[in-house]
Image 1 (cartoon, helix red, strand yellow):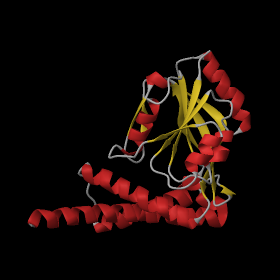
Image 2 (tube, helix red, strand yellow):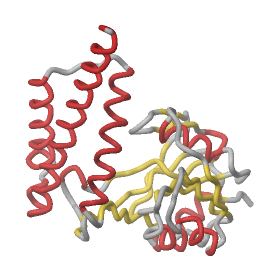
Image 3 (cartoon, helix red, strand yellow):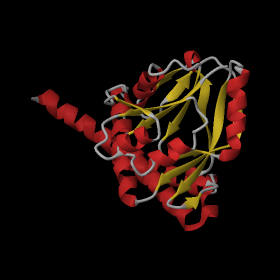
Length: 255
């Protein structure tokens, strides 16, 4: 019978890790890959039987963490979860059947986003399908910020797979906001991508219109508007950081 290991990437997730692990109690093994928590993440994870591995994130970013996680188990099947995600109860038998059948394919789980307590149906935070379940030896990851799976497996979707509790406080939101915009800017700078100040503004404006109008974020009410504005702000800040990296590089070259 093929075994299933659930791999969870963490850093300071004491508020989320218990419910996340409890939602995958059906797995044969749970491995937490932690990039330097200073809270009670380890204590809480281990109290629920998870194996806890510390591995600092390096320049390879999230893809590097996920590739490292692949090496921490010998289970034939693996499923990735973020600490703020929960497997929906109705998806459990579907996941178990997929593993038991051992068909060489990957599965995308529908992820339903809950933002500041509100379940989102539209805009940039609408439900999406995320590649999470597959045979361990058939995949690898690439990408520093928006990492993606590299595989030649065929794909199948699993509906109603995950609840994703994205943000609960604005302090948490802006902490991730700053971290991710910095990573994205560095990735773009390393690729040689450039943008003008005018381009930064136009890209930001399009992101707002895309999420609020084209993706119908207005149907999610006030929070739909707020998150569309934040999508535009995220884009603007990312490009401003890219522009600043070029400025700093130019000043360094002149020395």
